Image (cartoon, rainbow, N blue to C red):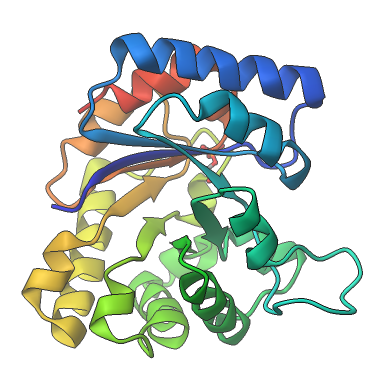
Length: 253
Ligand code: PGA
């Protein structure tokens, strides 16, 4: 089992004051209720990162992540945000390869390999998303698709670097749809992912990697998903925008 992690992906939601309110609420409830062996991560939009970081710095197991970063270190890339900038604000994690970025911004496995490298070189930790679309699952191709995403974006890393990566399996057909993967589907894919890692890096590395499930994870279904042997937590979209729901999910172990 990897470390228990529950990460909230706020996506492009919340104005300034609502973002501050949500972050403060999460911190206040987490202080009282969250077990210290669960790592909680909030991933707000870039503009809110600095403020949310300040609001959360008092709690040792609450961390902040960005939702993306540039492949480049600095320079003439209008509109982009570098990992160095994130680091200078004390940001700990970066979500990479979310299916919305793969679909709407055409992020490729190759580009994500570059982003993974620059995140790790700067000492931040990637939360690497993988997952198949509905047609791929219906065609029985989910393992092929997820296997390629991992191999082409991550398997160039050496074992030490790879050990720092958090993986989020997010079947695209379950994201924001209210349809969750069954526990059998989640466990099967998580075990497949851990098996691939074991083949490449050995069992010890594979056992230490946190593999999160994402896709319509809510307080009602989190306990059964998190009870699966190879599910080490969740990447939560919609439900991370409600402090009570987000913490209840994090308490589901
Ligand atoms: P959801 O999103 O929880 O709203 O389905 C998950 C995600 O996109 O990370």
